[in-house]
Amino acid sequence: MLKPQYNINSHNSTETNYQGGLLPQRNQAGSFYFETSCRSNLSNFFLSSENRRVLKKTDTFSCSTTPIKNFNYTPEIQKTIATWIRSLGWDFPISSVKTIFQHHIFNLIYTWTTIDGSIAAYSVCYFSPPSSGSVQISHIAYVFYDPQYSHSYLPIRLVLQVIIDSHQQGLNFCYLGRFSPPDQGFYKRTLPGFEYFHQGNWQKYNHCS
Image (cartoon, rainbow, N blue to C red; front, side, top):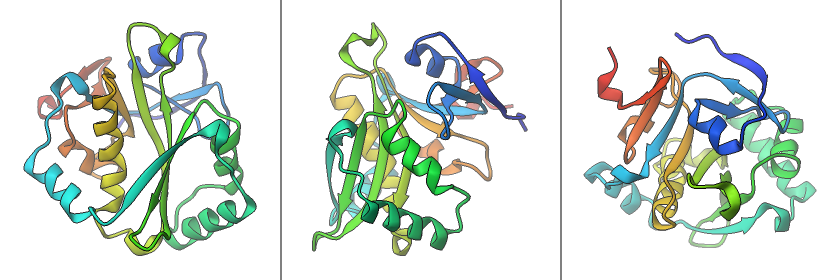
């Protein structure tokens, strides 16, 4: 298993860092870490029957997007997310939650609601600004959801929706975070155009030795 490397400072563009297998560190903007990263290559976008089943199973949820600079990160939202994290048993300090919502590179929030309007989840994302150059990317960096949906299809839908939206916007890649099977992100291998960073190159999962 690849040993993670933390507190990497890079003067390259954000897009170049992602392409080199780096991921942004949650506790400090400008710092990256290196572990096995994965992404959706949107030139190979195709919704499988499994992807379509996820969409169908979650069609009672709806989402809206808000630029992070316009997102009102209230004490009530922080309290809700902190309660979700405790119930899910995640190791995620609330100080880091505040950082990624307010003081990081991420620039778009997805808010997911149930059919009765209750908040079900938040996704914290990065989308390339138009001035970023020839390669345009997105990254669904962090998701927080109501624990009652932890064994449903909703957590996968949060990721799949960002991939779909990124494809519709004509982006090149949608980065999906860590991939360290069988424990971390193994479900991601079924997502459209899946690739992971292995031995200095991006490759399809079925190329793994």
